[in-house]
Length: 312
Image (cartoon, rainbow, N blue to C red; front, side):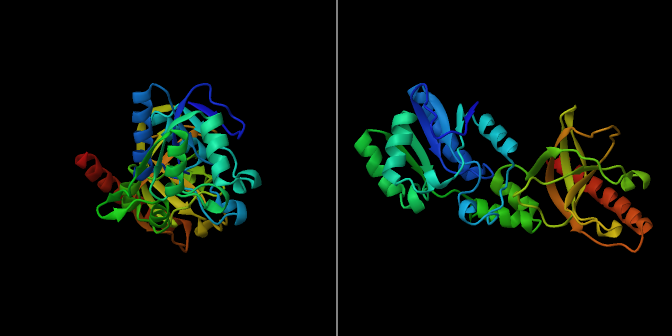
């Protein structure tokens, strides 16, 4: 997949373009991108995605919208859906103030040679988001460009949206988040050095920071599935999201203990999928009581994992 962060990018050949921010690449986003991929196959051209490197709202109100996917995971998800070109310029003053018609004709039509556009029913574009799907339809007719507008996607009667997924993650409702996403919420980040206290207590852990601006799950202990860059098969474990109050921590980490694994993971890239919430983060009177509770968590998690595997 080719990736460009420049507004000046010129497509070498005609394209079909999926339009949207695609945070989380959830089921609704997948429908848009799959439609664009199918249309590109019919027309014999590249499938492109127009997105941004961060939520547009954060340009005016920094930090107001937390992202569901880190940049690498977003790129991987788009590539997995068959996207040929990912266009992700920064949302800056130039793009913020660009009139809708200028964006359509100068960017989509002239530079990207769009033959067909695909978007969701609530897509907006141009200065202050004044362009909507009605205007987009009019412009496409004028330019003889095809347009597919997809309706609201619902799962079990719930509209799929990034905001709904964000709320589910922040409340620890990982099953709901997974249902709307189409896959478990995950953290992809390098393993960093920690205090090594857990190792001394008999359950070594790997530590990861959440990328800046990314949504952080409700503090507590989770059943997780982990993929390592050095290990071909997924591993199961438990992860604590929090500040580790028993030992005086202050920064939020994801601290994961892997079952049936022993090895040096420092510096490796690890993807942690959050499957189920076990309990809130607690402060214990001593590290011995913390150790007792962690061993209880491990036994409970292993029983839950057996049930998960049996359902597959």
